[in-house]
Every structure is written in structure tokens, then in C-alpha cells.
Amino acid sequence: MHELAPVSPFVALAYLIAGVLFILALRGLSSPATSRRGNRMGMIGMAIAVVTTLYTHDIASLPEIIGAILIGGGIGFVIARRIAMTAMPQLVAAFHSLVGLAAVLVGAAAYLNPGAFGILDMLTGQIHQASRVEMGLGVAIGAITFSGSIIAFLKLNGNMSGKPIMLPARHLVNLGTLAAILGLVTYFVTDQSPWVFWTVTALSFVIGFLLIIPIGGADMPVVVSMLNSYSGWAAAAMGFTLGNSAMIITGALVGSSGAILSYIMCKAMNRSFISVIAGGFGAESGGASGGAAAMDRPYKRGSAEDAAFLMSQADSVIVVPGYGMAVSQAQHALREMGDMLKKAGVSVKYAIHPVAGRMPGHMNVLLAEANVPYDEVFELEDINGEFGQADVAFVIGANDVTNPAAKTDKTSPIYGMPILDVANAKSVLFVKRSMGGAGYAGVDNEVFYMDNTMMLLADAKKMVEEIVKSLD
Amino acid sequence: MDFISILSIFVLACFVGYYVVWSVTPALHTPLMAVTNAISSVIIVGALVASAEAGSTAAKYLGLLAVVFASVNIFGGFAVTERMLAMYKKKERK
Image (cartoon, rainbow over all chains, first blue to last red; front, side, top):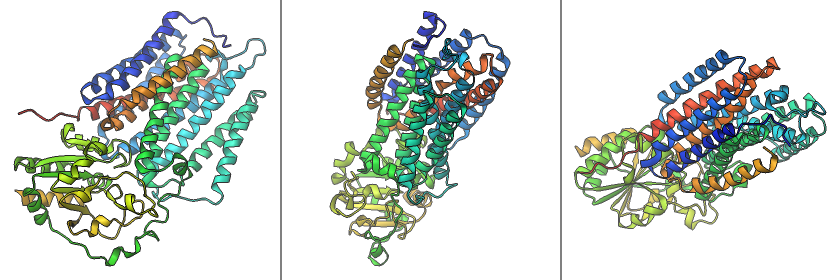
């Protein structure tokens, strides 16, 4: 179908090797021990893909291309070196937006100069019809990835409120826009006029924006994963247009990766993918659902000294970190606390809920950054049974993921979500900024008012530092 | 390549992706996202074609711009993944 100039088998082979190296890069991530070798393979694969492309085209502008790579590469490298680990979710969102934008630009370039991409039908002088569909879809997905990721970035970076923004009749508008995009891509097959192409592009930018603004902060792990998936499908669609196996393999890998991560995140919140996309979760925060009584219920408040004493007397402590730990950058102080407890003979473990933080695996990276060995860090299903034997559960900056209402209260918005059973521990230490603010879901947490719970009301980092001092 | 060969590669790669990603340990999900970000910038291949070939000045500059964006991602994505992975350490044996 594609009347490309006959591709040398060696070139096709080179792209295939690049694709295989990308598969091995992801395969390496099955264990921290093999992960770095995997990452190197990814780099080699990328180098092979780039060099092969440059080698097989008559390059009229090599200095400009090298310049572009150096500028982009330099910026990327500096950002990668300087970024704080707590800011990873925003960084990943920003990177997604660049993949989307690059896809749109490549699509536009292919539309303007189809001859260069070998997608021109020599008989009619027009672009192949199949290529038009691939190109249209690629540009549409790319544009959605771009504008959606920009909104996700602004929300994660705090430039925009994490509260969902609900436009009137948004479902109708969104479905209408999506239908228009699909309709125009179909129409593009019969008529390749510029207005069709640019309208598809423009509408896709708009829909990406509209799709993400109603989604609240708590659902950001799903959104980031979903946009990750989109960026892969955009690359795959462009790979179809170019008939390039490296792009297709990579696109399929990244697309499935993002889709699986979205699925894991949805499951960890007991939400359906559709309800996340529909948005609005957390809009009525602090409202009707049991939050009202929060102010006047009795609870026990403790000091850093009390907490230090309790933990130094314990045999085992399980630490439950959440997004609040990331916000106050408490991970280093937390590791220091863990070290001192271990020196005193206390067993210390860390329990991570899949949706703790704002992106999948966020807490693991922060703990790794603070030099917590990864074999002390456990996933929900591996450690949940151990709370019953633990002397202390130390909850820091997490809330909804420990809320027993998810098991008991059918009317609760988080009902059915798997939780960490901190309430089963002999005592619970709950570090929280104040009693006022509930979690993202806006639900009160029974754990606060239990007899064996001691609330440590302070900034997470300050509290942990004081505990460290008292342990000394 | 004809459409069916390309489609075959795509479908099989989706299956490979499915099994490979499920085997990734949850502790490394953030590096997974960073590295998938870097490799999806293989779209730079298309950008290079656009900026290398003669025929349309507009396409060339769009291509060059795409090369810049994709390079930010490639270098940034791999570098930040490398930085994160270097942090994961096992307990020191005593």
C-alpha cells in the first residue's frame, strides 16, 4: 500500500533492534537490580534509531539538526539533574506534553511535505488515503496529549487549583467535540484540504483541555498514567504513517504501559475508569458525607516526646507515608528516625498504598532518595496482614488510604477502596497538619478518634525532626 | 512495508507490552513512566525525516522544532530515570 522507496533490509533491521532494546529497557524494571542496565539499553536503542534515520536520508541541514538536538538535549539534561524528586509528577506531565506536541508537529510536517515521508500517491499526487487516517489520528491523539498534559502539569504544580472545574453541559460538549474530530478524520480520507487537517488539530487541542479540567487532584495518578498511554498511542499512529517499526513497537509498549498503570490506579481507588474521566471527584469536599461532626469529636493529642517514647518501647513500627510527607519534604528526617529506631532494636518497615502520592510509585522514589533500602518498603498486599502484630503504625501525610470507612460505610465516596489496616496496630500515631482538613475525598477518618490513636498535629517534617531529637 | 505487516508488529508489540509491564515491580512505577516518556520520543525519527528532506521550508522548521522538543524528552527522560534508579539500594549486609 505504501509505495516507499525500497528500504534496505539493514535499515529495517536497525529499527527492529532499536525496538527490541526498548522492550529490554522495560523488562529491566522488573527488579531494581537489573533496572539500570535496562535504562542503558533504552539509550542505545534510541541512539541506533536516530543514527539510522540520519544515515538513510539526504540531509540538507545536518548542522541545524545537530544544533536542535544539542539545544533540546541540554535543556532536558539540566532539568533532569536539578528537579526535586517531590516534583516528579509535574515533570512527567510536562514531558508528556512535549511528546504530544512533537507528534502534532511531525504530523503537520508530514501533511505539508508528504513526499519526504513517502506517503504520496504518485498517480493522483495526493496523500495515500490510509496515511491520511493514520496522520489524522496521530495528530488528534498528540494534540489531546499536549493540552491535557499542560492542564495536568498546572494542577500538579499548583499553578491551578486541584479542585475540579465543572463547566455546564460538559459531557454533551465533550462528546460532541470527540464526534466532530472522528467525523472530520473520516472526511479527511475523501478531502485532504488544509481546513480539515487544521480543524482536527484545533479541536483536539480544545478537547484535551476540556477533558482534564473537571478532574480533581485525587485522581491525578490516573490522569498522569492515562496521558502516558496517550503519548504512546500518538507515537504508534505516527509510526504507522511512516511505516517505522521502532516507532510502532515503542508506541505499543508505552500505550499498554500507561493503560496498565491507569488500571492499577483505578483499582487501588475502587473507581471505574469512566467515573475518573467524567471527573468531579472531591468537588464537594468537607460536605455532607460525615465531615460535619469532625470539629467537636474527642481525640487524643500527643507530643513528639510521647511519640518517641512509644516507638522506642515498641518491637515493630510500620510507617505509612502519603502525599503530605512529600509536600513537607519529610522523607530524610523520616529515614533518620527509622535509623535511630533500628539502632534501638525496633523493626521498621514502610507500607505503601498504590495511590499514595500523585503518581504511581511516587513514595518509593522519595524513600529511595532518602536512602531507605528498598527491601524495607512493602506494597499494600504484602504488608497489610502485619498491622495486627505491629506495635505502632506511624501514619505520615496519608489519610484516605487508611480510612476504615472504605470497608464499613456504604455511603462513603471511598467505599470499596482497598486500605492499609493501620487501625489493627496496637497504637496508631497520626501525623497531620491540623484536625480541620480532611483528605482529598473530603471524608472524616474514624482512626482519628480511636482510643489507641494519638494525633500528632504539626507540619510533618518538623514533627519528625522533633521525634528524632527526643529519641536521642 | 505493507499495512498488514505493520499491523502485525503493532498487535504483537501490544501483547509484549502487556506482559512486560505487568512484570515491572510497583516500586519502580515512577521510573517506568519516566523511561516510557523517553522512549516514546522515538517520534524524533519522524521529526528528523521532516527536517532533513528538502521540499518544504515550513515542514523543515516544524521538524526542527519537533527535534528540539523530542530531544528535551530523550535526554531529560533517560537522565532522570538514571538518577532515580541510582537511588534504589538494598540493605547493607552487616
